[in-house]
Image: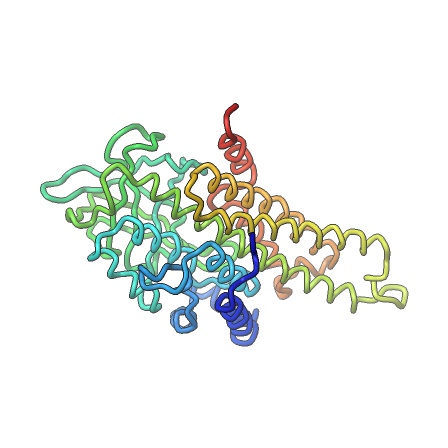
Amino acid sequence: MNFDHTEDRRMLSDMLRRFVAEQYGFAVRDDIARSSQGYSADFWRRYAELGAIGALFPEDDGGLGGAGFDIAVVFEALGRGLVVEPFLDALVAGDAIAAAGTPAQKAVLAELQSGAAIVSLAHAEAQAGYELAHVRTRAERDGDGWRLDGAKAVVGHAEQAGLFVVSARTSGGDDDADGISLFLVPAGAPGLQVQGYPLIDGGRAGDLSLDHVRVGADALLGQAGAGHAVLERSIGKGVLALCAEAVGAMDAARDATLEYLQTRKQFGVPIGRFQALQHRMADVLLEIEQARSAVINAAAQLGHADRATRERALSAAKYTIGRVGILVAEECIQLHGGIGMTWELPLAHYAKRLVMIDHQFGDEDHHLARFIALAPQE
């Protein structure tokens, strides 16, 4: 199998890396990440003009790519700059709309890809852990439409989103895969409340409260009760995106650490000449390449027709990223010494992001168990 990127992907990768390095430096990023909005509308539009959002979607949905390697290329470049704009929300929520939406519902994809709209997935709930099928939010028939009641947790860019893809149970028990439906809920819907807060690794999220939120029949995304399969595919793309972002962040942390080892002197020589530190850095480099290989495999299998093959590759990558990400964060900070923990040094922010990526869409323990459960039965 040929893993070389196409010319278009190489150009996109080079362009995004240059843009992030030249226009989205750490000081700029830090101001945006700690702002009241948690992202920059101006940069969101500029990323759209570069084609970075469109690259996440196939041509049939108005995009420029949409394949696993397209997603990986974009998010690896974003990871190098700790970009906080709502790319992950756009990918996951947008993919669900593209997969199950009607032509009228898909009209929002054009606004999303142009940077004019923010759409977020509201699926996680406080008691769910990482279980995809755990949904307690209920949706019941209400005349010609639906009434939604429940709560959603840690919804990305919830305060700025104009539209939410909300999962709600229309039948079955709280942990049943069957019976989950998806709805498009506008941000201004009566009964919908958003409680926003800053995230520890930058940007903002929010919790949603849905109290007798009424939507029309046209708000149902796809078939009633069939939302689990759509969620699995869309969140699977989000898993790949997070893994690629982590590789980009690891590369940036590696480069910063190598530079520090070559310039920081002790006993009159750069500390990078000390054999013990060389061995530790060599281990870090090898682990990063193993993580990169896992992401390449997941990107290659993203479109596989067999669910188990696809999902095992994604869980293997997420487990590897979780394990290696923590190792890279810890080792790079320790190799820097006390300065590695200071707020002013970008490295500390890369370390925080790597730790939090492990907890998005399932940590390493969750995905290791899932990988084992998906193994072929003899």
